[in-house]
Image (cartoon, rainbow over all chains, first blue to last red; front, top):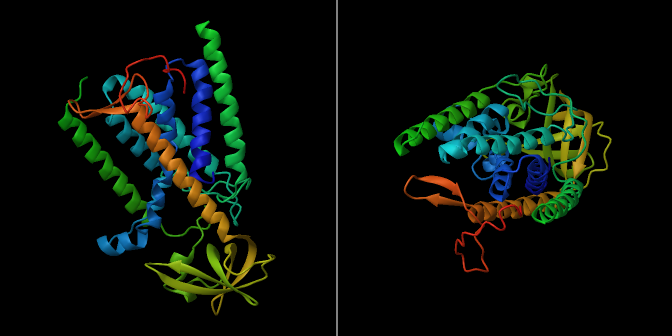
Length: 166
Length: 178
C-alpha cells in the first residue's frame, strides 16, 4: 500500500485479530508481524544508494526492487528466523511471513498507469497482475482507514482480555 | 536441533548470498511488455531511438506545462527530457507525472494513460513512513532483547518501559496488551 505507516497499521491489525484465535500471539509477536511488513520496502534503499550506482560499483546488473518480491521476502523471513532461538522459529516465521505478505498484497492494489501492478510473485512468475488501482502510494486515506481499524481492534482486544481475566 | 552460533552465522551468510543473487538476477531482467514489464526511463535513457514504437511506463517531474514536458532520472543522475502528447491531465509544474504511452521520435511520448501527483504528497509519504519506522523500531527494542550468550533475539516477558527507567521489570501482566 502506500506509505509504511499504512503497512505497519495493516500488519498490526491483522496480528491483533489473529491473537483472538491464537493466544500465543502476544505483544512481541504483533511487533514481529509489523517488522515483517517492512521487509518489501527494504527496496527503498534505492533512494539512498541507487541500483544504478551499485551496478556501476560492481559492474554487474542489480536492482533493489528485487527485494519487493516473494522470493526475496522468503529469503528475508528466513534470515529473521535465524535471529531467534529454535523454540521461537515457527512463530516468528509465520508472523514475519504474514507481515511481508500483507505488504506485497496491499501493494498489488496500487494504481498504476498501465493498469498492471508489479511482479509480486517473482521468481515464480514475472507476470504483473492487473490492479484495481484502489490508491496511490502517496494517498492519506489508506493510513487513515487503517488507523481507525487499528484503534477499534485494539479496544476490542483490551475488552476481551478484561473479560477473560474476570 | 540446537543451533550453534557458527551454524547460525553460516546460515545467515548463505541467505544473504541468496538475497544478493536475487537482486542481481532481478536487475538483469530485460523489459517484457507481454507480462507487464514495460521499458522505463532506465531503458529509454541510454538509447532512446532504439525504443521508438514500443510502449513505455515511467514517471517524471513536470518541468513545463505547455507543451507538457517531464524530466525523468536514469542511471546515476542523468536526465531524460520528454515531451508528452495526448495526456488528459491538468499538470502543474513540480508535480510527478505517472505515464503509460507509446515512444515516438524526438523524445516524445504519446500518452495512453497518465495521472499526476503533487509533490507535497511525497513529503507526506516520506514523513509518515519515517515515523512508522521509528514506531516499529521502538516496539522491537521494547519487546525483544538480545541474549548475548546465544547471540539470539528473545521476547521480553514485559515490554521495556521508559517510565520505569528502561528496566526489564519481568512482569507478565501486560503480556497480552498488544
